[in-house]
Amino acid sequence: MKLLKWTILWLATWGISQWFWGGNPLQPTLVPGTILIIFLAALVLAFLLFPDERKVWLSRLSSWEIPVILFGIVIFSFLDTGLFTNNILTSAHVLFQQLMIAVLVFMVPAEKFKRTLVRVLLLFGVSHLLLAVFMSWPWALFFTILASATAILFTFLMQRVKYGITLSFLIHLSFYLIFFNLI
Image (cartoon, rainbow, N blue to C red; front, side, top):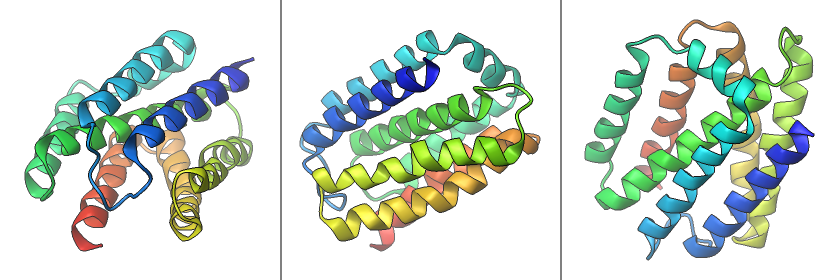
């Protein structure tokens, strides 16, 4: 049942947000506020739908990590050359993805890394192929390959590394900083 809830929330959030985005990852959206609201609502829904995973996620964050994550968002917003509203949108988008990955990682307590990784790869990594509905196949493949590779890293960090949740978020946000400013 949890996997079904996860899949519905993931697909609905991505489908609606990508529809509003317009499909070109290099173009800023014309409605960042609308998409930001979608991601914030999805974050709230994720917290409500997955209380056990939320508790584990929050318990693994030390008191100083939340300010570090917020500082990362501020730094990203100033270093990225895009509009401030688009940068806040990207930060919310990354936070939603990270929470959804954490839900998959913490879904089965004391599970072996390999089983957790398979779940994250299949649901997070491979689901990026669905981006082909909204953008060209080369972009969808690009994001799917990156999502699959980072699924391994993020799963490892969240499951096995102290401060791994924060490191995972900062790495993910850094990808967008590099992506938006170099491509």
